Amino acid sequence: MDMETTGNTDHTDRRPDVVIAGAGPVGLMLACELALRRVRVVVLERLTAPDETIKAAAVNTPSAEAFYRRGLLPALAEVQKEALDHFGSFMRQRQAAGATPVRAAPKFAGHFAGIMLPAELLDASDPGFHDAGPAGDVGLVPQLALERLLAERAAELGVVLRRGVELTGFDTADDGVTVHLRPVAGAGGAGSAQDAHPNGAAGGEALRAGWLVGCDGGRSTVRRLAGFPFPGTAPEITGHQAMVELTGSEKLGAGWNETATGIYAHGPLPGRILTVEFDGPPADRDAPITLEELQTSLRRTSGTDVTITKVLTATRFTDNARQVPDYRSGRVLLAGDAAHVHSPFGGQGLNLGIGDAMNLGWKLAATIHGHAPEGLLDTYTAERHPIGAWVLEWTRAQIAMMRPEPHARALREVVRDLIGTVTGTTYFVKKISGVWQGYDLPGDHPLTGRSAPDLELADGSRLAGHLRDGQGLLLVLTDDPETARQAAEYASGYAGRVRVVTGHCPGRPELTGLLVRPDGITAWAAGTDAWRDGEGAGAETGSGSGSGSGEAVVSGGAGAASGLTTGTATATRTAATGTSTTAEPGALDEALRRWFGAPEGAAG
Image (cartoon, rainbow, N blue to C red):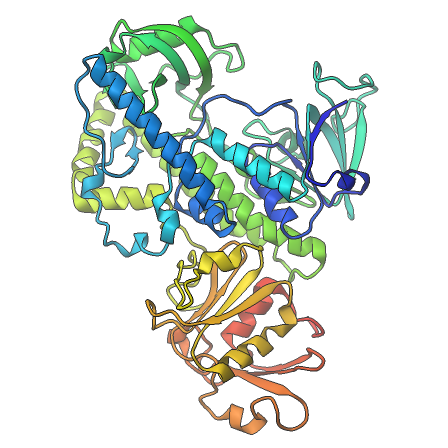
């Protein structure tokens, strides 16, 4: 019988809305996002226990913001504290062994192609670093710890996690997907393989669901069976990353080191090593990694006679860089490494996948619940593909600079000089941290399409705290109770989809309104009073208590500078029925309908 971890085991007797293949951080994050919105989810994982192989060591700002907005930041801060303690232990071990002292950077800044970014040169006054709130202080979170936290959160939300089973095939139809699965050999379970299914199944169980999402890694079974194209560039390196016990570690340089034969890294944890060699990809990437293989690679790249005495965990990697053109094929979708693969330099892979999950989760849930506007699910590829393409180019550039040959080394020195300036370090840190990311959304306000600033309201609450339930947020920044009433009335047709919060933000007096999507992206912003009708429409229709109809007027006459349609645009909504009549709808109405569909009781 396959292993199973659940929060609400009664879900196993009901057809799931979504089956997710893969219980890594991307699959678990997506499962949490869906379950938060009352979507029934089953996650399939072929491993019987979490993979303890060393992986990514940090999260970027968009990922930290995502966890912050779901209430997980305090737990991540504790993980970071432990990581910093381990770094301190690493430095003390080196000092005790007589290694050359290395001054710890005052703040983690990262690296580009193994060139460390000096944190003391970072321009902290750059506006790009100002809006993340407490999330901007969390980054050193190892992937293994993150997976444990997300698994716990998924169980709390009632996600069914089935371990020790593998997806072997699936059939798609207009109304759903039938997923074929079987116990993994050695994982226990009754039954034996039967005749092969036309789409790759080999007997076992059939699980019917509405949707299938492949979060099953770079060699995704879902991607292969669904026939997604996967164009890109072939690998040219062999990399190793491992946690080991070794003697002679004082002979190794701390951090990233370039040599005549390649690149190696040592730290920031005791026993953590990484090597990069440029003599082609491994002959067999799946072959067991031996102590001798790691030691040979480390000695060759470092030029030392350091000795590895024990291997705790190890993995190989390459710079294979590929991306599917479309993340969706009917009722089958991809996220994370299943949709894009690249070298791990700069720590972009984990973060790219978390961004996919945040973007997809609320859109797929809205589609399942039947209130998604037309084409909403298609915006998943439209928004995430360009960022994935950028990451592939970013990692390819690093590979080009890491090659141990004269032209690459000459270019490396030019970039090193640039990084040695305030402007250069700030540029690279902004790229690595992800604060530059945004989507091309309609609207002229500079916040539109960007991650919403973590505004602190006068009551002490912060914007992120109002996003924990996974709804959108209409934030009305006003002291006027009538304006607040009008805003609440206007959004009344979006109950359960958009939360209305009225308050005052002393630190950002120029802002009077924000519409924030569930993934934290600003869909609409106003810098003037967008709730009043400059042409006097409010006087014509009353404040909501006249004419016997209870109509409230919301106008968009503030002009393009505030993110509204130029000219007077009015929308009236009847409080009693929730119906709406619109003439030249304003930008807020357009944004609500674009991302959250028609209000309750109104025509689409």
